[in-house]
Length: 417
Image (tube, rainbow, N blue to C red; front, top):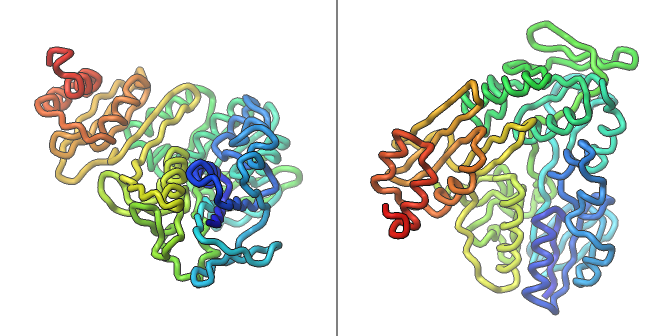
């Protein structure tokens, strides 16, 4: 059996390793288009913060790791897939044939259509090479604008602050982390960042960037402007699906897959940030571009590729973030469930907030801020769909009792509930 895995991020690497464990005799080719050892993009901020060196970004250590597993690493770019011929076309390597194919091509950084985004000094933070350029350009006291205060932007925020730069964060939406936090949580995080010396401009649009001598002039929608040394763009990502045009493989925002992570073409699978598959709570096909989902996708897709039928229950939206020491998390249908109940408790002065969303007597979504001890419990309750019974009413009055509710409903007899 000949397997090709396109993409050497977490999904691709875990898939290749799983294939080898499952089928010791199969042929495995892992294709990546960057001239680097397979690495984790989520480690780049730690590199910028100088918490790790470049080796620390690598997914696996040891020069012979892939060789010892019999995984053939190819540095090339796939330009097309021809399902009927069971082949892919490579920029440098011509055609390569397969019996099973995994598309794990991830995403690319998206830049808004703003004049000046192509100037030197305007950087993404998505590749290892991006990280090197930002590290070279940002020193203590450097004036930096970070465009975007979403999940990725706030991770980059932490790294830039650690470098001692003079940092301004600009977000078009009316709050920080608009796809992870509601207004209450987003406002708390903004105040927290400001208390740490970061300037945060929400509901603010960048209109243009211009070169002014050695500096960059950044102009905002309200008519104001500022001169800065570096602009870091973290305004979102887009799945890498362009090379599939004309292949017949169905795509929407990403590659559409079923509960086996197979596409509409037999023997062709997708995993990670490029895969648009069933969501755990609704069944709607979504993209959850987070490393835990990518890792699980890679494992399950590989098992199915190797002939071990494995059902994927669906991905869960989940984010856990440390922003300058303030930990926030969101899970599932955190922004509400139509027809369901919800409850919340906030202490703005202490930067503590908890919100729970219910479907009948099951928690299906949650937000937490400054409450790290609840994170694992809430995730477990959502993923397992534990029925809370009369404990739902208790949580509606006091959501902080979620630990008690978990123990009561999972170890009831032991704890006298």
